[in-house]
Length: 69
Image 1 (cartoon, one colour):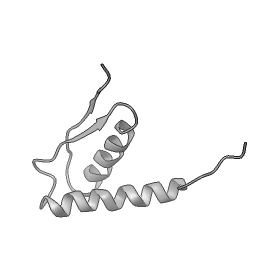
Image 2: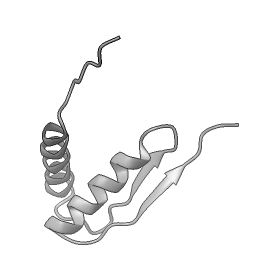
Image 3: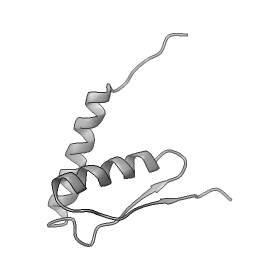
């Protein structure tokens, strides 16, 4: 079975950077913003967005939610 790549690592980096800019723009900065990732796949995205927002503006709290019972 061949591997199909939807996004390259560079595509993911660009998308994460753009999302971080959108979060900052829509909230007039990063103060008051917190990021939560759902444990089944969203934690890495919350952490990546948090790191990018930290690079652009200021540090934001990042956490994880485990929705399993």
